[in-house]
Length: 58
Image (cartoon, rainbow, N blue to C red):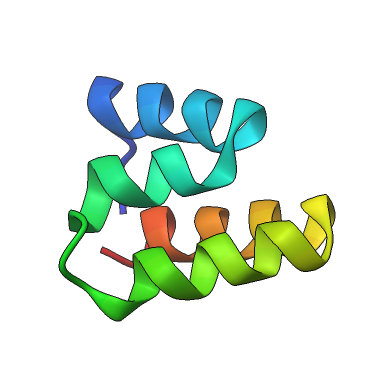
C-alpha cells in the first residue's frame, strides 16, 4: 500500500492530536473516532497507536 500526501498529513495530525487524524480519516459518525478519544484520554500513546492503525488500515 502506497502512502499518499493526504495520508502523511493525517499521520502528522495523529502525532499532534490523535483524534484529529482519525476524524480526518473516518469522520465523526464512526465509532473509531469515539474509541480514539477514550484511548487518548486514558493515555496519549494508546491514542496515537490506534490513530496510526486506523489511518494505515483504510
